[in-house]
Image (cartoon, rainbow, N blue to C red; front, side, top):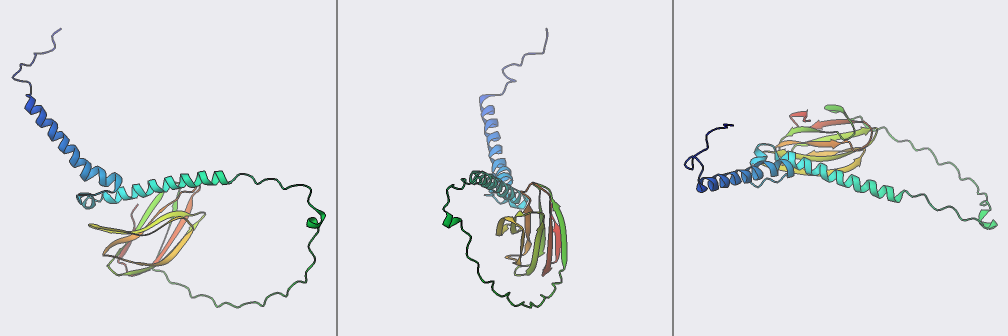
Length: 225
């Protein structure tokens, strides 16, 4: 059966051409690894290109989530090991130890303490959202360097893992992280001009509702994902 003309030796690539093609392919692979794969997967950005393309933040979040998952697995195993039933109470207890304690004279009830009601805080923004098991979301405030924002968030129906952080072109910071936290409040001060806020993830087995309330020096607030 006729399949085609057999190429002549002149039409075949030379050894020098094959070596050059192999070297170019290797260089391209290294460039993609350093400029794209490392920032997007591991949060490592030696060239700064990943930060410009906003891939480094993606890699940092992936690494944080991987660390959270490993810690959750370790905590689950530790809880399972420590949840063994306690040993049964020994029989043959002496009659003296089984005897009821002597009656004591009841102490008078303490006087009622009147506490003044705390002043109501007037919030500028209130954002409620629901997280299903394993779901995460992020809310960012646009703030100038040194600006301060008072915040309070609460979880209804469970607790969440969170990361309070900030980012700007060529800059990033993580202020504080927490695991299995039902609520948090305080003042967030921007370390530099850019976006600052929170990332929450529901590691529980049921839906939870999170309510974020904020007020202070910020020009905008938005839910990123």
